[in-house]
Structure formats: structure tokens, C-alpha cells
Image (cartoon, rainbow, N blue to C red):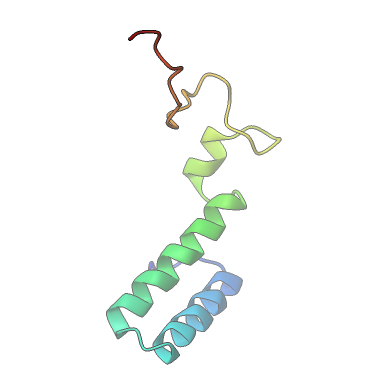
Length: 80
């Protein structure tokens, strides 16, 4: 767990998720990984990280100059 990077709220969230994962039968290392990834994902979604603030505008959407890399379905080709 990163020192000083998370607020008290996020520390509590981390501990709660970690305990829940341990009770579900996960190993200590896996429970810590799941908890840390979950907390970091929530921090990113709520704009608590530098990368999420710099890549998103005030509406929470990515700016239009960032390429959309999601897979797109190709139109069917005409042919035999």
C-alpha cells in the first residue's frame, strides 16, 4: 500500500476490501492486490489522481483530441 497517497477514507476502504477478500478465501497477496486495484480504480473515477485529472475535462469525459481506441465493428464487405 502506498504511503501517504490515499486519504483516510481510502485506507478504510482498502482494509475493508482486503478483509472481505480474505474471508472469501483469497490469499493474503491476492487480497491486497484486489483491494489496491479497487481503491485506485475508485480514486481514478472520482478524479483523485493526477492522470485522471489531466486526461479528463470538467464533465468527466475524455477530451475529443484523445483517440478512441475501443474496437469498432467493420462494415461487411461486398463480394461473393
